[in-house]
Image 1 (cartoon, rainbow, N blue to C red):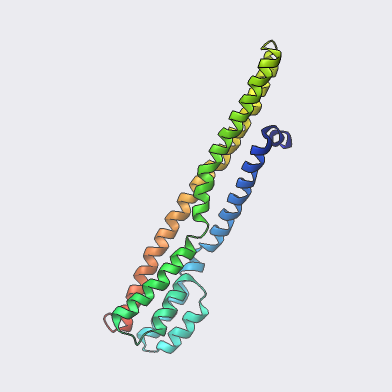
Image 2: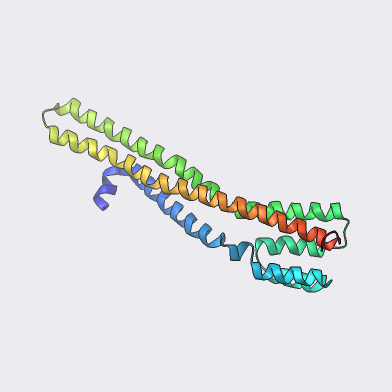
Length: 202
């Protein structure tokens, strides 16, 4: 494995660094984008129960204890319960946009890695092929085994780049879809709470 990496030269180390970064992001987002850390059902039910009972203060206390995306959105809604409906809705939408940005953090970086890794692999292959042809210009094509070995080494970076890019692209699409689902659900819950606070829904 070490020999495979060394054969790719400097470009291979760049691809290796991209793979480490992608793996770190995947683990971090997999942990952060769990439902329990974004939309905790237990906290949601407790906050809604308190609002329906007319105890906004208790609902606010419960929302403050819930350090989640939905908890922070509902905390702002409950803290501004006395504001006019349009003001309350604007405040909730503003904090919602901030939470969306937080949920999308690092996901874009996976897309960049998925796009750049194959290009790095191609760059490494091109550099390797240039070295092969320089070797041919000096010693000719008499030793086919050396020529084949040089080409194989040149292709190592392409293989490595694709190995990093494909899982990164899959993870990027997966986390994008998960964030989109959470955003839609948070918006629905936030709108429902605005209506509850204004007595428009029971």
